[in-house]
Length: 207
Image (tube, rainbow, N blue to C red):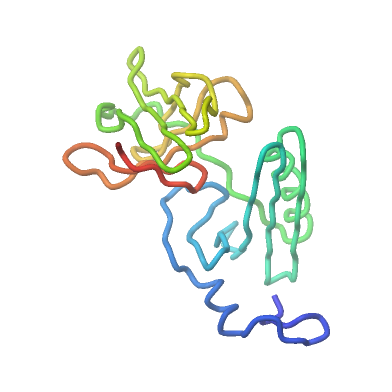
């Protein structure tokens, strides 16, 4: 927020580096979480009610962190937590702070579109990355997802139900509040099959 200089005007980063960090380097799909519109160098670039924010999230076993910066208002909010529903906590805190001080809010996820008529076989199959495999299959006329972690175990139960937000985006519908925020974004359809699926900003390639 200060062109790479500390409060005492000491140079930490060059202004050129700061600009590069905040310039879109990689595009992201529509409906990416937290209204992210692209990647800078290390930063999520976001649009909340027409205001440009940047930040980053992190997590490990039982610990989560969230950083949101609104340069136009000279605001930075950091949230660190080691228990409970971390995403709900961050949304509640950020919602109150940014609405109260800047009159903006993080855009909400759209509701599932029940009217879509789609060929589900284009989504079916396994998609893997270094962390594990997501397996999408059709069960009782609907699309479901299962998880296999490379270290053993799974991230959630087998055949979790999914609902479509649009033809490229699905969201979990399990009855579990935390799981039901999870989105999967499909891309690069070739020969009638999607080749990639993103989950939590991590891409999985079709096996």
